[in-house]
Length: 527
Image 1: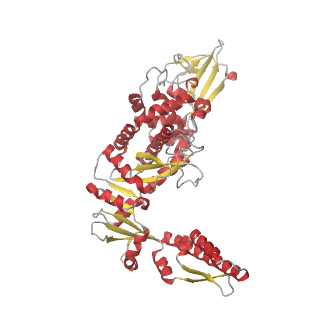
Image 2: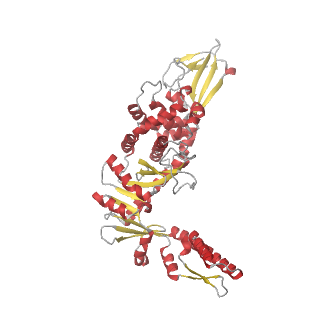
Image 3: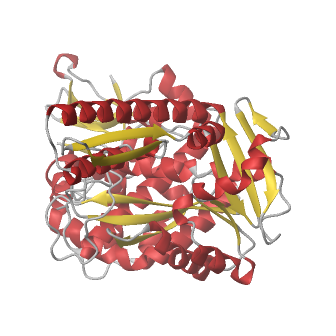
């Protein structure tokens, strides 16, 4: 049986790949051939390839010098990012379990015993000071690789909660939780992405910070980092306030924001007209001038949204009606104080606010001395509700775009929302187990870098005609294993060959479409 000759490595773990070797022939006992140390290869190898294309590894080497440590901080930082990309877990789990079960020791040349949770934690501390420079580096590399458009800056805010009290973290506060974990402290994350979803940067805010108060800070940060180019800021209506609009209009900043729904009433006559522009089936838009002539308002009407809001209004109306009837019957059977029933009515309407405006409820004292309830329905409210169902407004100072172009730019905010979903589901940015402020910031930075790898793979998939969702491609390639093949020879020695699993037909097609070359082997070690 033939085996290829390779020099025996020194120092234990080997990582040098080789291609052309002359065959060396030995006699092998085929009955004793075995395999050992089957490790996950595809995911770590793919992540490392993506890091190299973005030159993240070079950035780490340039900004995180080795110093006196045997293993440089740049290499440890690579481990953190690659593990977050492949299978998110804690630093302790990486050190004690995950790292040694993957091909990372072979790919990086770092033996498992050299990786421990203390070094992983310290690498977080070493990486964090380079956040701003790293974001600039990634913007330049992504722009060069994929010709990304930087005309739109999409900004949104989410939250991530803590496990534990986080008493030493001043940013950990109770606030509006997007994760339905109001019982936990949290921090807020403001993320800026391009129209394609590539992240440009992020900032961390206290957990009780209102979204609307973050706009000036994030714009100042991005402009300080990337200049005041002729870009358009896109944000949802949670960022809309007159203070922010005044700030945005300074120095000619352009914007498209969701408008307060209360302003829709001013354009009731426009809703009744038939001069709507159809964007696609079930979605219409029209453009109206703002009061000062400097802004435009984009009225939008969605059939699907209208059906959803109508069902919601009907449900709340029926719920309020049924509850009021029960209260009225209760008052007939028992003498309640007027203030008691008033509180119950207030609580009922508060819990069903989307239908509360339809009802005019009066609680008074009955002739018998107890409370009594009467109510009527406001037909004007119902008429307005039916007219405005499915309608919403955008507000912009971009006057040279069509209403369709403005709407399509605004709807790109789904890219920021999708980024948050991936951060939370695939990259496990939540919950946060770190308690110190700096460690929390570094944890989010690692997740940010892993998301950049995710989006890079997504763009490569798009260019290869594999769709825009890299999750399936990553899963398929992650199934590839690295295996030690042990060959007992006639002279009593054993030859250990480290081999990458041969991809199946589907994996081979993916690699060809992505223009990725899978290494076949590593240097062997003789035992």
